[in-house]
Each structure stands twice: as C-alpha cells, then as structure tokens.
Figure (cartoon, rainbow, N blue to C red):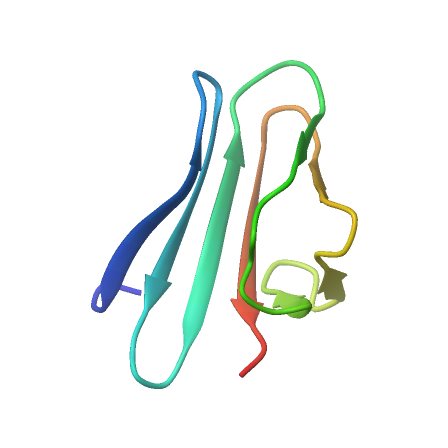
Length: 78
C-alpha cells in the first residue's frame, strides 16, 4: 500500500508493527528483527485477518507470535 493513513501500533528496539489504511482496506505489517521469537500483544481492532504471505486466517486472540527475523502482512477483516 503506497497510499492511506499510517499508524504505529507497536514499537520496540527490535520489533515494530504498523498499520496502513485506506477507505477500502486495512493492512498491518509486523517485523521482528531479533534472533528470538516475540509475542506481540496489541489491539488489532478486529479478531482475525488474512495472512497475505500464506493465505491463512490469523487470529489475534491471545497475541501474535512473530518468529525470529520475520515479517508478517495481515489484511484485516472489514
């Protein structure tokens, strides 16, 4: 997404999650730049999303685990 609103959701020294939003869609980008897994707890504003890399449904309940040195792209439910 090149256009739309930007919102920082979570920011640490080695992890960040941000949101890009337009009138028609909302995407969260999560990055873990650490050599350890990271459990991210945040308000996603919805219960589930589609993982744009795997196509699987991602459930935000209970937190979102990010593997070491990974990124995730979640298209939020409407």
